[in-house]
Length: 146
Image (cartoon, rainbow, N blue to C red):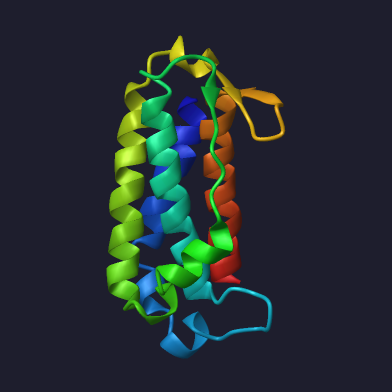
């Protein structure tokens, strides 16, 4: 977990000042059927919101924890990330993820083994969910930077 947290913190710190330097025309450029770079960052906000809830709820709800999926496309559209100023969107993304870092740093090692049931009835544990969250974040940051 320690390596995932270090990677996570590095991703946050490297990009908090970078995203606002990208020109609006690059951030807002759309390809039919794809999110803009700004909408990808908005998707990361939605992901942070949902995973912050998951990472906290698993500690006090009945086990095994049941993972609830969310409607990614609908949330990006409803939250209108395309029109939010990039500095504001970046601050929201950063603040949510700083809280997730706090949760990851303080999680009880026993909790990392808590079972999570996915929508398809397969099982993972909190350790996998947290590590996968960091990988997901890195993947989308690379999309924004490309």
